[in-house]
Length: 190
Ligand code: AP5
Ligand code: MG
Image (cartoon, rainbow, N blue to C red):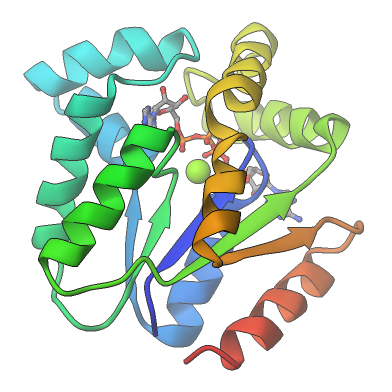
């Protein structure tokens, strides 16, 4: 499978659909949020820096993120395609990803944009808070994450449009429907 960038607001299902896509097409998966949370759990220097930003719903600085992404990508087996979940989130990150892939003779591939209304997103994240207790899943921080998404990340959709690889999927109330639409599209892309 080509590389896939899964893009959307907090709670839009980037992680959930990534798992389904990995199960169906057998590719690598990089969730930058998961990478950072595991650094926090391990008490590393990077984790200490990341915690302050994550708990406050803010983005980690681009230079740091780009470095982490390249190291994580190079640690995966080459040639099977990777799904990027939560990266890029800013235009500099997107430019850096394109450059990093080009340097390795690889391409951006396909961008999947998930559109979900904010009421549904909030309900999902508050529900996840009860099940998993993620530090940034509380109403105040979720609102900050939505604001950061609208200001810093959403404009990137247009960047992908310019690249000619933007594909939008809108939530219509059923996970099965969303998945079948995504799979039907990806089946044409292999
Ligand atoms: P990150 O971990 O990427 O969090 P996020 O973008 O806020 O997104 P979530 O993981 O909360 O949601 P998701 O879209 O994966 O949805 P999910 O599938 O879990 O980033 C966290 C933080 O790390 C950032 O705020 C930032 O500080 C930092 N960071 C990460 N990357 C960075 C970068 N590139 N640059 C700078 N900083 C970065 O679904 C949500 C819930 O809904 C789940 O519990 C799921 O089970 C449930 N659910 C219920 N129904 C459905 C359905 N029908 N479809 C999908 N999910 C459903
Ligand atoms: Mg996630």
